[in-house]
Image (cartoon, rainbow, N blue to C red):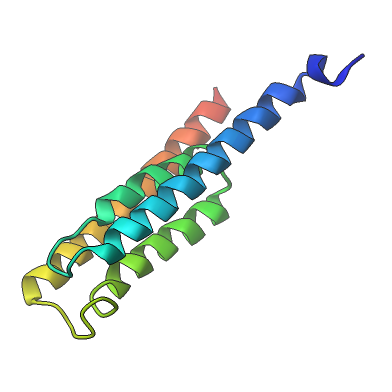
Length: 117
């Protein structure tokens, strides 16, 4: 039996594709987040990597990626400008962090429901 006919080969290719898409999405989100001024919140771009990891990864990995994304969103308050942003920018970033957390929890729940069926 050759390697291509094994049932785990498509699953391995799918995992590589999902992993690559997650890394690429994270890199693009980080670049967009840190290249824009503090007043612009682009943290919603982290939804794609968080959703992919939540849907296909382990729950612990999902939380690590989610907390990392939330940390990067909040870190963007200080990094490009060197000073804390306005209260509106802080509120927007906290809301984006909450949205990322909800996305991770819902995608993890969808993954559990899918595996239960």
